Image 1: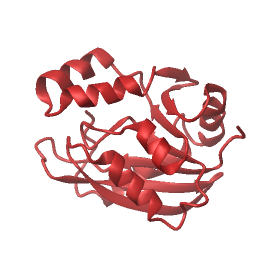
Image 2 (image 1 turned 30 degrees about the vertical axis):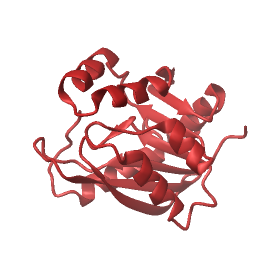
Image 3 (image 1 turned 45 degrees about the vertical axis):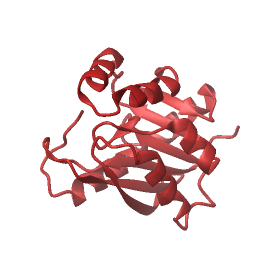
Image 4 (image 1 turned 30 degrees about the horizontal axis):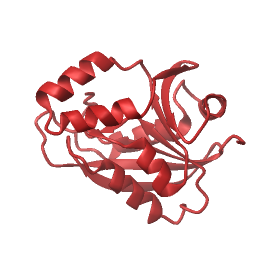
Amino acid sequence: MSCPTHIVGFDDTPFPKGHRGDVTVVGAIYTAARLDGVLCTRIRRDGANATERLIGAVQGSRFHCHLQLIMLQGIALAGFNVVDIHRLHQALNLPVLVVCRKRPDLDAIRRALLEKVKGGRRKWRLIRKAGPVEAAGSVFIQRAGIDYATALAVVRNSAIYSNVPEPLRSAHIIANGISSQPGRQRV
């Protein structure tokens, strides 16, 4: 597989800890090092609709036919709305690359899901189904529809101004800029 250069990176907007409604998710569309567009959708905090909403956002965009890869800032958006990366890959026929700045504490995530989150067992199965968390330079990844060598090349080629690939860095900046919430809530 050649190294994809037409990428959408998704991240969510900050939200207050007690928020229980929808959360905006921003997608930054990149062609190589150039920002070409922005997508937005809304997903339920700790819900189960992230995968379907991302599919809809990509399919409904004018960039759909050009995209070669989907990047996610973590496997869960809006708290614990876990993305089924294999379903996303199959529905859009695009590889999916989950990128995390730090290695996720899977034991803590499992405990939180099973003890505190509605639908936690199903969400934990999706995280396990996504495959192992792998080091990729200075970040950690999970992937669907893309081999490790290509994923590593994508991370290296698209991480221009930081360790985080530019589509995710830009999505994060835009998401924080359009949010009315100061700071970033990390789950």
